[in-house]
Image (tube, rainbow, N blue to C red; front, side, top):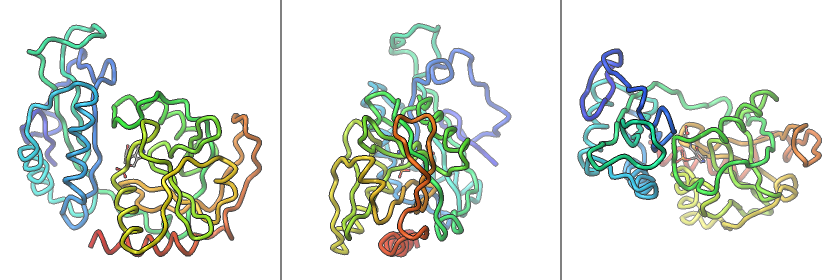
Length: 287
Ligand code: PDD
């Protein structure tokens, strides 16, 4: 298995990450996770575009143009003969003596990418999973796919501590998104999700779902909705590159949250009808 290190296909054991890499010291960098189905990069252009947008938002200039980067990622997948899995890629702002401000122009971003086999989570998608509500304690630029993930990590761990698959975050009672996914509710045949503002990452899977809805005439409202509206939903699901469309069939009690919530079953405790329909339509997109 090869990885990419600064534009070269190399063995994972053959590289050195400097102790003063700004990604390592500050989380100063950006990343993407791209799905590979049948050896092909799914929604490749959208991921690459978002990567360059994230770079621009943190005033970081990537050392490759888009075509060159795409080619490198394609080569990696081919080299590793990956069929079903993911590519992880990240750029840090580079190596420089530790100081908060940006280093000089001579410092170039450090790029790594690797592949991993990841099966589609078929049984969870079929049966649904448990979620937990947690406070969204993150910063105000969640639109950037930044390496700084402490808020997300603490949320996901809270979920794991309660035997849950995902933490659904809310900021003063408005549901924002999952710790590593976007959140959707279905109410009376309408799909609601938080608008793509600075408070969420505009997921690529989210965009695919919204496009499907447009095509199929399923009504979507991108609007902030409350925790009470989440609890009152007919169906709930989350979406991400790795989880695709994942039904939430139960919400756990969160002892830490200021919101007093008893364990709550969503719908009849099984993935709802519209969620299953969207899963089927999504499946057609990836074939
Ligand atoms: N997470 N919101 C957050 C905070 C995320 O980290 C992710 C993705 C998403 C969904 O985005 P997309 O549909 O483009 O994967 C939403 C990736 C998979 C991760 O960090 O592993």
